Each structure stands twice: as C-alpha cells, then as structure tokens.
Length: 169
Image (cartoon, one colour):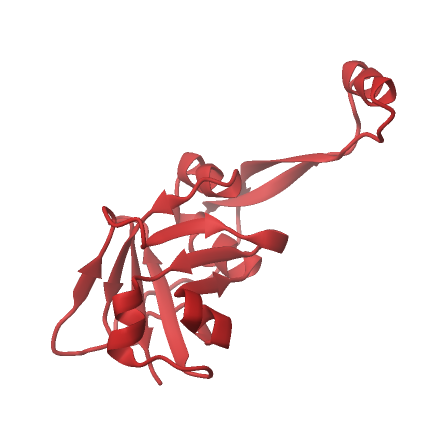
C-alpha cells in the first residue's frame, strides 16, 4: 500500500536567467523551494483508534493561551495534516495564506461544539521558522480555563476538513 506525502523540493541550481538577475542586483542567488507530493511506499501505520485519535499532543505555553494560537511543529503538520490534504490546499498554507477552518471542540464528552469556518478567529496558517498555527476561538480558551502546561490533543479529519481539539488538563 502506498500513499502520497508532501515535502519540499529545493532548487539549488539557478537557471542562467536567475543567475544573471542575481548578478544584476548584486545579491546572491536565493535557493527556492516548492511543495511537491512524493509516493510514500512505506506510509506510517496509521490505524485510526476511535478511543484515542489524538495524533498531535502538546503542552500549552503561556503565549498560546493569551493569543489562542496553538503552535504546531513542521513535523506534526506535514505528517498528520498535509499528508491527508490535497497538494493545492497544503500549498495555500505553505505559501502564507490564512485558511479559515472548522474546529470541533470535543473536550466535553457530553457534547461537541463546532467553531468556524465563517469566523475569522478560527484559522490555520504558516508561522515563522516552518511552524504552523491553529488559531482557536477565544471562547474555547475561556470556556475551558486553559492555562500554561495543560495538555491538549489535535487530529485532522481530511475527509470533512475539520480539526478536532480536546483538552486533557
């Protein structure tokens, strides 16, 4: 069984035109990169466990609570989000577009609350240093009384294009 995963293709060798343009502006050639899909002949065993689907787990930092923006690592996003997204939608985020998303809060086992995508407070975007940000609705932060050190879980359902969120405290 094979799947497609996203990775960067780096262009280390400039064309003659790019080389001349760099010389004309007296600046060194900038290595460029493009998001591509490659066949993954040995994909991870991604058996969905409905009792514990939380592929991304992390402890919250103070600034994440203040801003409502959860920082996600490059590895987590490429492995657990982009792997199951289309190349086009992954590329939108990589190129810096703020993408409005749906987030389903599953912290309360008695009922789930959906936020977004028509609320500009709930979005997914690229941050600095190849990290990514999932911005939660501030009501989620307040309702759960999130604080520094709380453990959260996130998983992405590509079929329905929803981020699922749970606070484990």
